[in-house]
Amino acid sequence: MFPQCHQPNRGDSVSMDISDFYQTFFDEADELLADMEQH
Image (cartoon, rainbow, N blue to C red; front, side, top):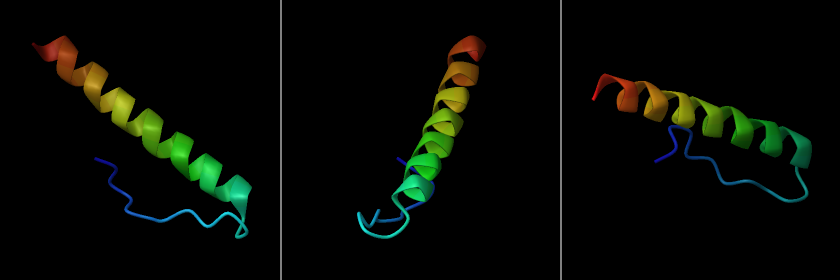
């Protein structure tokens, strides 16, 4: 489902993983909203 298949490491830059997660989440949500508007 997520375009970035990347396993988050707890000890390795957690804040970066969180921002990556939100970036991916909002990209997915934006695509879903655009898709719903077309139908």
